[in-house]
Image (tube, rainbow, N blue to C red):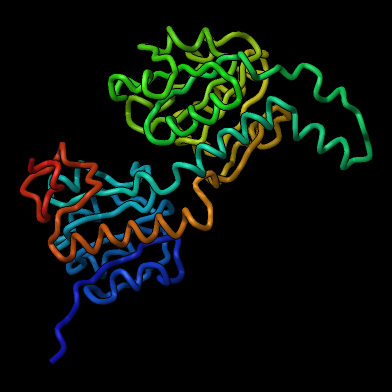
Length: 336
């Protein structure tokens, strides 16, 4: 009689498991739900051993309470704010992420957005497409070299962005209370210990912080008011890190010259003020993507689930601070 393999769910976003199958087929059965509704997990909740989650679904305390055999939930991406990590930890369930797959892509995207708004790319393009040829659309664009950019958050992606900004000749400041001491010296940038210290110096601001209770609306009316008038804002992190209402008000007052947003507070975007604003450049939460990066993200997520299923130490645990009686092997770094 064949031995029943542990069940692994892929909850959302994917319609196939071409990347995951080679990693998991020898040790697990994969079930693709392709849903954004958490109740669709219910029929499998009592026996699932591992869950691969993207960003179209929320894994709430309600569904976590039903996960009687689950060892871990792996968020295929960097952010994990759509998983209740505290509820999972209290049930002994690991929450892991894939923190490094899209570092280059998001940093590149941030640079692209900043260059596009600084050099007035969209107004120029729209004018030419409508039959015009007016160079005055670029009037007012600043020279980049020698200007100051401030990074809110300087982890993997923020550091990669900093290197790119430096290559353009920008002075780079960053605010990140969790950054490794000496990072500023290693990369050749300047560390600030508060937004009040950093923002008044910055013509450009790029957001690279995860979404936490402390970083929700870290960009707001008060922090935007600290910037020099006519500053530029880029967000490729998480939508709720930036208050959309505050951005609209700052654009209307001239406190912001332009804003470029890959992420917004509610996705898909339903704020017509942002959608139609002539000084807002939008992309649809796509900064993470490249062909290679997407494959890497899926493969690394599947490899983490494989470690959970085979009772091997996980690598990218994010809820270790709220664990009770873990059902899985802790990362080796926790055991040293």
